[in-house]
Image (cartoon, rainbow, N blue to C red; front, side, top):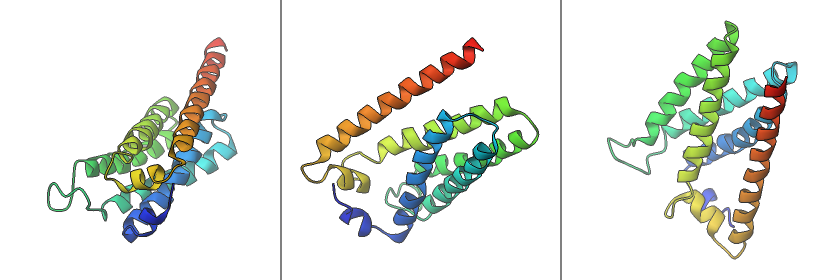
Length: 163
């Protein structure tokens, strides 16, 4: 693992990674914690700001130039901005069920699924993570972490259904 490809990347890419990395970690934490608390609201605001910053910064990244400097991934950025607005609006009007669905979609589609594509060979994050001899350990840690999060979510869902 080396940060050199990221440090050599354009400033927009660095901003993008600086926003999406804490958004990924904070989003997982928020998903596992009780909802509706003052802490949830505070962390949710921070998470939403990070998601908006991630989406906006993507419009300045043009590595996959399919159409005038933009690619299909930029459609996800538009969806993230619209989804963020709709999630906030739903929460403010008390439609918590819709808020949950939108936020879950933003997290799993905008961070987890889109994040997986950043590790494709030839991409900057692939070079960051898989350069050097320690990449198997990083991969193992990611798999173990994902399994633990899935177990925690499943247990939490079971407790909510039992109530």
